[in-house]
Image (tube, rainbow, N blue to C red; front, side, top):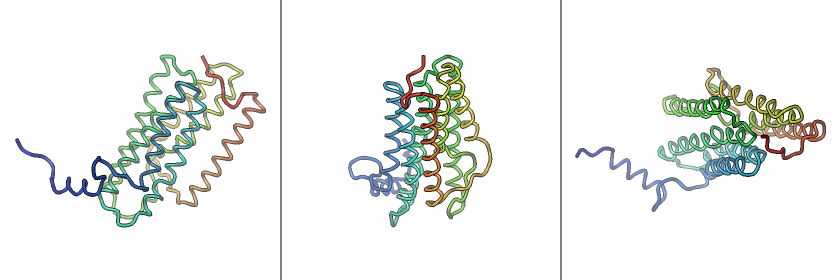
Length: 240
């Protein structure tokens, strides 16, 4: 049988990874791994406890993802295999945390009717397409720092979904269907922006800090309005 692959390249990758197990394990990927773990925990908590905790985990994933690239770039003498692994593992982690976990927030919120199935399936599909497209353009672009993204990066789900969740649950006193429809709008709009071709400037560390501060202030404001104006408790009851 004809052997496939390049043994020398495979040996080089093995030499740069862990000695006894596959993969890379260093401080440059810790935040990426934590983001993925937070996404999985968010899925579990959304389905078994309350979607509120899924939103909290989504925010944690977003915070980890905001700085994982900056942390990884501090490692000196990074090899091509290390960089490629970082790109791939980051996208796979993003698919879990920002493509799959958010739909379980919706399901935990009560979006279990059959007519929600299609949009809830389209959301992770658009995230998958966006991430795959990013990986292709990342490998084919010329050297140098990326200054802009095409389409909305999937990590922005860490902003959009919590905001729509807080706004949607403000309508709990009207009807459960109203809450679900507002949440549905959030999923559809975010998914559409994932694949819409437009250029979004890439923020640096200063921009990220400003964005985090702005989002934090917005989330706290919405939470206060929701609790003290609309009378909805911090941890909303699960809708039928």
